[in-house]
Amino acid sequence: MTHPVAHLLAGLTGTYLAMGAVFAMVFVARGVDRIDPMARGAGWGFRALIVPGSVLLWPLLLVRWAAGSMSPPVETNAHRRLARRRG
Image (cartoon, rainbow, N blue to C red; front, side, top):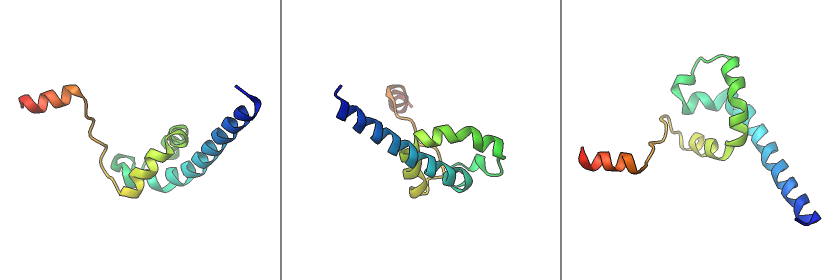
């Protein structure tokens, strides 16, 4: 890998993580209650535990928060499709 490409990748990674850190602070304080009803009333211990995942998965969480989704997404895999056909 060339020097400029390494710098570009490092810069993009840093930007992604910085945006994720900003998003995580807002999401942990306000957004988690809106997309997960079970998180309502959770203490700061729980919220501190979800910060790393929120930093890394911020695009997915942002989409779910913006959509106002209150339930977890339904997993679709070969086993579930087969069970639906038989059921």
